[in-house]
Image (cartoon, rainbow, N blue to C red; front, side):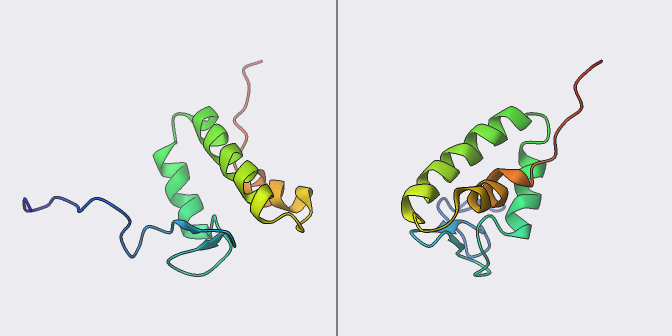
Length: 89
């Protein structure tokens, strides 16, 4: 491997979801955990719409897996934490 290159795939610190429980594969918290939320905000800092689409697709999948959880709590967990950008006046 070239020096400085990252191996493809999930590393031990990726904070990726483990389904069907939707827990973090790194820290064990509910996904998206605090670390992943911070990383997603950094990654999508100029395109919150794409972040919302991504998290919405995760929410849809999680709703199927976590069918006993209240939908409102899943919405808060997956998309409720995303800061709303101000709209121009």
